[in-house]
Image 1 (cartoon, one colour):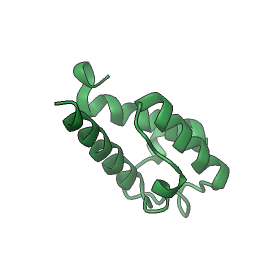
Image 2: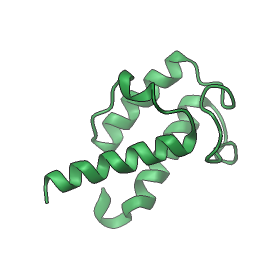
Image 3: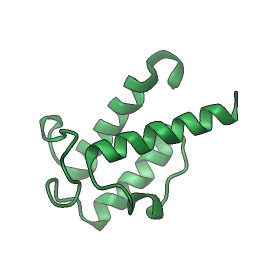
Image 4: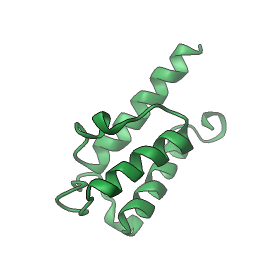
Amino acid sequence: MMKNGGKTDHKRITRQILVTCLGCSEQDLSGEKHLINDLYADSLALIDMVIMISEQLKIDMDEKDIINIDTVNDLYCWVENKILAVSSDFA
């Protein structure tokens, strides 16, 4: 997944997951938007996001991880850092 698209690829996939789970448009996903307060993510949407991110990006994410993620940018940064950590484990 990372070889052809790198950072752009996992960000695109994360955006698609947010659109699917939150029922919003990509235009609604500016970085400073708060997942709960601005995009109205409820607990079910957050759990769906965790599952989809884990499955589609092949990284471990659970409900405890989402507690510290407030904004769209927080989520992008978390995903990027997790992918970098996993990549460095295999380097």
